[in-house]
Image 1 (tube, helix red, strand yellow):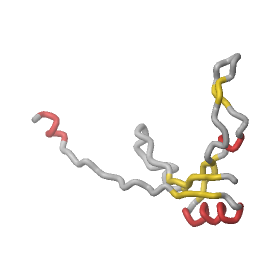
Image 2 (image 1 turned 30 degrees about the vertical axis):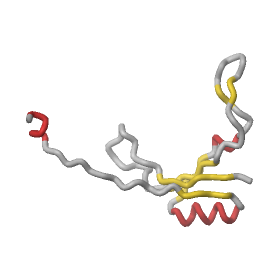
Image 3 (image 1 turned 45 degrees about the vertical axis):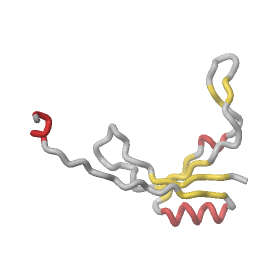
Image 4 (image 1 turned 120 degrees about the vertical axis):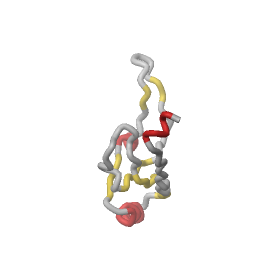
Amino acid sequence: MATARIFKRPKNAMQSGKARTDHWQLEFAPAEAKKADPLTGWAGSGDTRDQVRLFFPTLEAAVAYCEREGIDHHVVPTPTATLKLQAYADNFR
């Protein structure tokens, strides 16, 4: 049975805007551990679901997809954003 986690993508530390942070993302849990390739040393596995990421406009749509397809899922709550307000003059105290 496939398991998946549903979460809202956080804003990247290197981006100033909020692009692609309003969608919900579904990722499958790995079915097998990754192992190093003896020739190249790259990590890989036979699990192709590791490459699949599905995006949904709402949480309800993502949950409905999982229930329709029979996928066990858990929702990771979105952390609350905290703003640290400080003035430029604080740098010179």
